[in-house]
Length: 463
Image 1 (cartoon, rainbow, N blue to C red):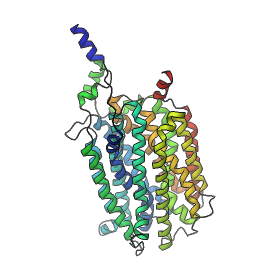
Image 2 (cartoon, one colour):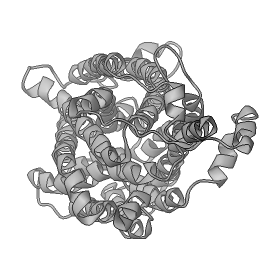
Image 3 (cartoon, helix red, strand yellow):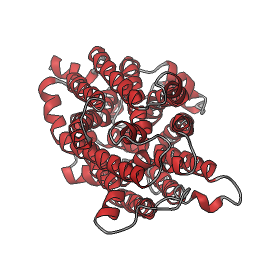
Image 4 (cartoon, rainbow, N blue to C red):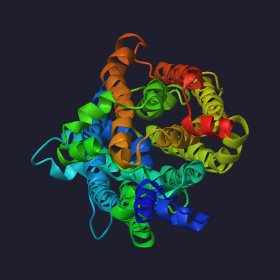
């Protein structure tokens, strides 16, 4: 009897407890601040770099540092967060540190001209962009792993959808903030040549404060499972696995990369084309819309360009608002037609939305384009992770989430390297064509997702 009890204890796999909606909300609340800062960066970094002297065909080169840093940082953060246990827990120390560093970058980037005695403002601005993006990466992926750590399989779609809702809310606030400060609160959006307008400066400072505050909500309201509890959520390790764990090192990331699950390999191409398209949109939307919709010269960075830039912020807020609303319906839609088909249809909406920017008659019609992009954005932030989580070993959740980030940053790096020269030499300097290519890229991703094997969906079908 005693031997049977020991055997039962060693082979029984505990199930994770279900969390209430508000527990999941608090667990993900830090994403509101992260995405508010991320939205400020996405909507305004190109404009700030142009103010500091960057040409339109150089913009993607300045953005390359950010995903390149993420390529290095993410798997390392994932590896160590799998092995970190402190008074703050397993994942929380990482996204708290990332939030503090990102807030510093948010404050200093638009104030890069303060350092002209040491370096050109453009170089400092590009450096702050690197710090911001690397820090957002440090904060983001441990949040993804936290959902997979704490939620049972049947709550993961809800968990990632709640994250998407908060991402949408934060992004709307961040995207609209410069326009709101200028048009609703009278903060000027004019500045001398080579200086960032006051409404942008204040927006980045406010974003930094909200980022830190929202992260602290998650840190103080969410408890992680102890190492002992975590071990009971998976089958006991074999002697070989125990021996391998004792010999583990950072270089294991490369062997884990080779051994990645089939679902992860299939999702890699979907992620590649999704994020290739998103990166092109973030880098070139402001100059493309200013030139194609407002009819401005690509060299015009005056008050009319600032108005166009503020309007792009409004548009980015719209697609993030759409994503927040659509995320509420994602679990129900996925339950009805499956996660793969949900993601495929959503990506198709985004691709068509981006392509439609070329055809709209004026800036107000761009709201329709943003509707499609918002649907795709919501799905990109939730569905791949919900599909992936069921195929990853629990004890390697962090490192595989970090490796999965390869397929987010590599397409951005490629786009960053080739995007500028393509705009200059193939598009005649007109960045609107970069948005069309981004739309086509999302359509390709929509086709590729159909072949992905969703482990959890397969289990449900068998039942």
